[in-house]
Length: 202
Image (cartoon, rainbow, N blue to C red; front, side, top):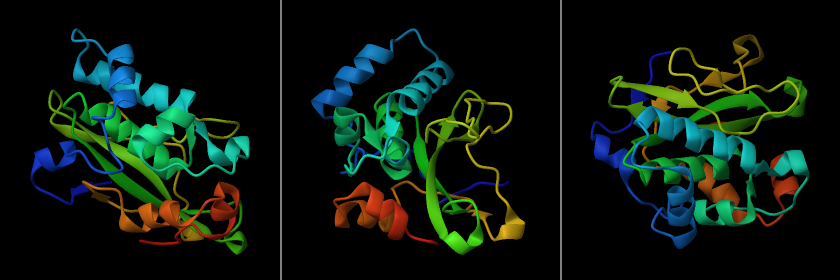
């Protein structure tokens, strides 16, 4: 799929935002812990991706009611849905000067169209050494989901089933989509939110 940048200014994908608050003490501390000056941008992206994928729980997987949004909050509580986890990965990588954006998919919420659809969030990372964007999905692996770091071929969490009305959105956003941020800000029970209130389209 041909990815399309929302902004032609690469620095827009390095901005600090309310949701991507990499100046916070907890983000800085974690960045110092997992990154070092001798790592390449590719090594840093892999370390950051695997940390968020493996060490931050997906709220639904652990059946937690807590809703997290800002990167510092996600890191503090070590949990969040895909929207929140994408905020944390963007925060960690942007803190290292690695342009990171937000991408979305429309997926079946569960296993059949009758159970509804939802927007799923992942990240796109720009590697200057490769001069290309690569999508990474730090949602978190479990049985049936095996997202990996790859600069050769995408290994995302969810293959798109177009015949079932799922879709890949090609845009790389510089900021989290307002619909995804709004749902996190408007709810206090992650399970109820996940079951009933995730946006179905952008």
